[in-house]
Image (cartoon, rainbow, N blue to C red; front, side, top):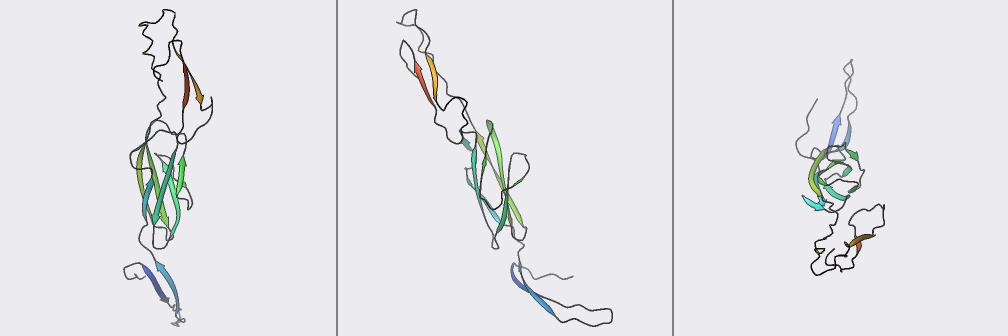
Length: 178
C-alpha cells in the first residue's frame, strides 16, 4: 500500500511484483489522472426564491471540473434523485402552489460529486372578477349581474410555462373592471 503525493493532476505510477521464490518482474508503468476534487455546481435558472406564475419550472444548472462532468442528477422536494445524463436543463411539471426545493448533483469523471439546491415559489392565482359595480346606483332595478367567459386558453386545455389568459365580460350596465 502506498499514498500518492498531494495535488491533482497527471501522474505516472510504477509497479513490480515478487514471487514466492524471490524473483522480481519487470517494472511496468501507467499514466493516470488523479482527481480528488469535487466539481463546482451552480443553478443558473430560476433565481433563488423566485415566484413563478406557472405549474412548471425550467430548471437550468452547470458545473465545472478540470476532468469533465460525467452526469447530473436532479430532484424535486423529497423525491428520489433522477439521472439527467449530461443535460443541463430539466423541466418539472404539474407543480402545486407553494414552495418547492430544486436540487442538482454533478458527478465528475472520477465519481466525485457536489450538489446544490434552491427554493422556488409557485403561485397560480386565478383572476378575480370585480362585481362591485353592481350596486344599483342610478341603474334600473331590472339590471342583471355581469357575465364573464374565458376565451383563452380553450376549456380543458393543458398549458405550460407563462400562460396568457383572456376573458370576455358583458353587462347591460357596461363593464367597469375585469
